[in-house]
Each structure stands twice: as structure tokens, then as C-alpha cells.
Amino acid sequence: MAYELYYWPSIQGRGEFVRLTLEEAGADYVDVARNPAMGGVRALLALLADESLARPPFAPPFLRSDGMLIAQTANILDYLGGRHGLTPRDEAARRWTLQLQLTIADLLVEVHDTHHPIAASLYYEDQQPEAVRRSADFVRNRLPKYLDYFERVLRLNSERSTHLVGNELTYVDLSLFQVIEGARYAFPRTLAKITRRCPRIMALHDGVAARPRIAAYLASARRLPFSEQGIFRHYAELDVA
Amino acid sequence: MAYELYYWPSIQGRGEFVRLTLEEAGADYVDVARNPAMGGVRALLALLADESLARPPFAPPFLRSDGMLIAQTANILDYLGGRHGLTPRDEAARRWTLQLQLTIADLLVEVHDTHHPIAASLYYEDQQPEAVRRSADFVRNRLPKYLDYFERVLRLNSERSTHLVGNELTYVDLSLFQVIEGARYAFPRTLAKITRRCPRIMALHDGVAARPRIAAYLASARRLPFSEQGIFRHYAELDVA
Image 1 (cartoon, one colour):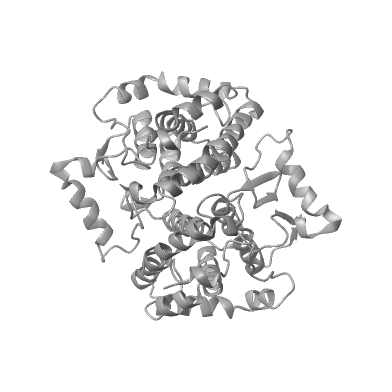
Image 2: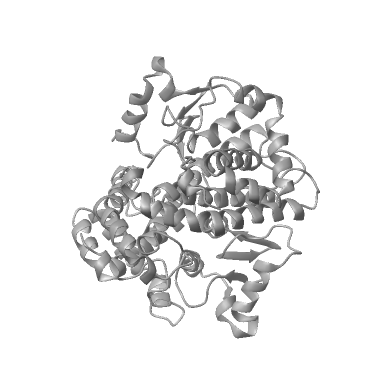
């Protein structure tokens, strides 16, 4: 039976990390909120409000599979990775892969808060001065710290591969690719500076982009464009590196 | 061999979630940065900078066990839970437990950002106006949303127990206990209002506090006090519900 992915229909957001793994796996899935025949976004909202669910999700994305409704991006990816050969079988390596994904999850919160430092429920325009201040720290200190870390992980990988874990593709490679795609959209000036010292990350990024299933996905209508509604938003005043 | 826990020596912080699980498990562990004989905080800093580690942590807490260095709180708890009977054996229930812990992790980021909405590297005093604004949203909207969710999870638990998952204690019960302890310290006025409608969470909290090993731990010198250095900080101007 096809996986059912539930995520906001008009943005990449956190759902995109799940989409990339489903696409690379060649998995049969339905993006429910983008599918009118499945009920569209109302089906997502109905599940969030469903008082009969014994294990309700707190927020999208969530995935229906095998009678389960699984939420939290890293948790979904660990589950899918195990079913589709996109995480190592070795227990220590699998846990390390999850650890790296959770570090990316931390980075994504910080990216989101560059444009929403006060409240997700307020418009950007209503927290712009604070956003400028928060972004200044993010582009100078936080984003470089995260990317230096992942460059170091690639350098220290004893397999000397273009992958973060061992010498085969895992879901966290796909996620790091997406971080670079997003950061290049949101913070092009900053990223141009940082990536000069992150050659291994850029090689990983280019390797993922060239994978046949990922390339086909990126060229398809299933890939939503970046916009000023998602996690990665481009406001020139925040890209001040 | 004893577990080695690495975390900042003077605060509860994220390390406290690991400490609570180790204590409830009755596990043999060393809190390295608080132990001069083990090198204290310098041992922690040395590991963070160690270029010979194949799998370096991004940030504390991390746990050394069985030749591994495991980071990310939820990842550590899933590992320890599996070894000490503090997460279900059933795969779906174990994943659900991790999902709940990751939701608590999201909440903790929001708690931290009430007093540091601009940059973790700046003093509170240098971002106080922004902190007041962010906290107003947190105490009115976000904290109630999270606690209503966990109350609902307890209500929907088909085992009708005082535990979040099934009818036995898991690490995420310990974590929710700590969230209530912290919120009661940082936001006493807000919490007094919210908890009236969260009787199941309060019953869980009191049940955890009464467990013999937890009670002994809380009464010991191993339990650090809350302070204005950790995640949960009390500033009266932020507790404005």
C-alpha cells in the first residue's frame, strides 16, 4: 500500500526532507494535502483534530504507513531509511545517522527563527527589526558553525567517501543537500562565502543533485519552488554576511 | 563499565533529561564535567575539539558507552531506554516514545528562546525587550498548546494509565516531569493557570517525583538547582500570563 505523506501543500518546509527520501527510494506515496482526490489539506487538518487517534501527531509532517501515523521528521526518516536501505543496518551507524539528522533539525529551527524570532503566529513584517538582529548572528556565527561541523564530519569519515556516513547514500545526505539548496536560496551572499571552505559539502550536494531519481524529481512539478512561506525565505536585509 | 555523561557542570539543561533516565535505571555513571578526577569540564571541551574522533558530537550532552559517543538528547534516551527497560520493546510503541521525546525537544528550544530570542551568545540583558515580546507569545499560545497536547496524549492512552505510553514508565514520562519542574520554576504564574486543566500531566508529575530512585536523586547533591544559566530561567517580566 502507498505511503500517505501529510504536509502543508504549498511549501517545501520540513515535508521536503521526507519527500526527498521517498523519491530517492522510488517509493509509492501520495502527498495527501496536494491531492484533491484524497481530501487535500482538509484531510490533514482532520487528522490533527481527530480525537479518536490513540497516537496523535503534534504537527506535520506525518506519514501513514502500516497502520501507524509517524511524526517528527527525523523519526520518519529513520523509519523510511530502515525500510529502503537509506540508513545503515549496523546499529551504531544507524544511531549516528539519526544523530546527524537531529543536528540538521536543530539548524532548521534556527533558520526558521531568522525570519520569525518573536512568534510564528506573527507576520515577518511585524518582527522585522528583531529578524535583522537575529539573522546577523545566524549568518556570522551559527550557519558557519553548523556547516564547518558537517564539513568536518565528511573529512573524518574513515571511508573517505562523498557521504556523511560510511560509503553509501543515507537519508541524511539528502537532508544536507536540501539544507544547501535552501541556504543558497535564502542567504546567497552568505553561502557563497562559506562554501569556499566547505568543498566536501558541495561535492556531496552535487552528487545528490545528479542522482537520477533526485534529478527527475527536482525537474518535476512535484518539487515545489522555494518561497517566502517556507523555512528558507529570501529577504535581502537578512543576508548580511 | 560505567557510562560517561558529558554535560556542562553547573546547569541542569538538556543533560538533566539524561541524568533522570540514568538515575531511574539505577545505572552506574560518571558525570564527567562535574568530576575533577575525570578531568572536569576540560575533558568535555577536549572531546568537542578532538579531531581524531570519527563521529564527533556537535554539542553536549553526549554519552560514552560501549565504544560509542552518542549525542542528541532524544537519541541518547532512546539508546538508554532500550538497555534499561525504559522504552517499549514493541517497535511501533518505541517509535511513538521517541516521537513524543522529539516534541519535548522542540518545546525546550522554545523555552530557551524566551530568554534568548536573538542570540545564545548575547546576555539576556542585551535582548530583554525582544525576550519580553517572545515570552508573551510563548506563555499565551505555545506552552498551553504543548501541555494541552500532552494532556490529550495521556487521555487517549488506551491503557488509561498515568504514563504517556502504555502502562509502564518510559523515559518520556521522566522528561515530561522535568518540563513541569522547569516550567514551574521559570513561569510559576503561567503554570498555575495552565495546570488546572492538565490534571493527568500533574498526576504523572507527582507519580514520577514519588518514585524511590527519583525522590532520592532529587534530594541529593547530584541534583543541581534551577538557575538563570540554564534552559528554564525565572525572570518575572517574562511570566506574564
